[in-house]
Image (cartoon, rainbow, N blue to C red):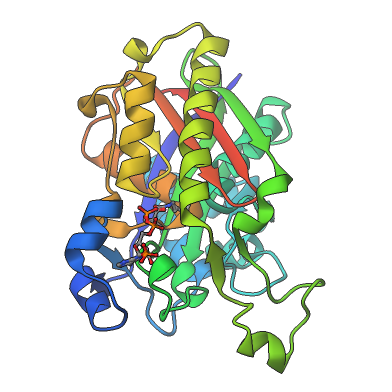
Length: 325
Ligand SMILES: CC(C)(COP(=O)(O)OP(=O)(O)OC[C@H]1O[C@@H](n2cnc3c(N)ncnc32)[C@H](O)[C@@H]1OP(=O)(O)O)[C@@H](O)C(=O)NCCC(=O)NCCS
């Protein structure tokens, strides 16, 4: 049995924040942002919109594509680090919104690798027979944890959600492998320090901007390229394929320079590599399912095609999956 993607969906908030908008907020320029990141604009959730709202729409769209109802869902796994509340899990809110009463639901915290870590969990459940259909969602409202006065980080991130519906099926199509890695020694290079048990809520903590993202961009960049290349090769080797066999490489959309460096090291062509970072920026755990949905709607994924995906994020965490479409 394999976990086959039978539906995809995504949701991007309507509100577009361009680089020119950011020029009015911090000391930056459109040209600098495009040259260093490839990002031209990003989406920002409306004031009354949360991660669960966006995740619900993306999930419903994936279910509609598959012709599946909420009663058919056994499991909902959500990759997010910007949930509506510290707890309960945002996946539970999505479950309630969808009316997926028989599904069990939980979140996975693996930052920008969250979707692939969630996919791996769902695939394991389905292959072990613990369910027939799983929703795997990546959804983030990063605009709420970005310091909009910090030019080092605020130009990079955006909001959005994507989802895939997995069904356990016999045959050649489906998830062929998931490879996951973590290295906690880098945790401080990319993190949100408050508020948790280490730094509980306090007025001083707010003054010190602990609830916002902090990042050492240069260091993150180097490890990201190395890790995504290594884990992509791991996926290909484990399944007996080479880069030439890949129809679409859908990497985590963090930064165009990271994507281009990784693609080059893997020996993949531009035509093999899906890129939409210029439109949405880095939506963390949501980038890969949004990109899969866009590629699917553009007809870039045909039955039998090999889809390679790789992600990297805070933790550090990194992972890959190889899927036969
Ligand atoms: C953040 C990033 C774009 C910065 O690009 P960089 O080429 O590494 O630039 P540096 O950090 O060396 O900064 C160079 C200069 O640009 C400045 N700068 C930083 N952000 C700027 C901005 N938005 N606009 C203008 N100047 C900026 C810096 O202050 C620095 O100035 P200085 O030389 O006077 O100190 C890049 O490091 C990056 O993309 N890293 C990965 C981030 C990421 O993807 N994180 C998520 C991973 S999942």
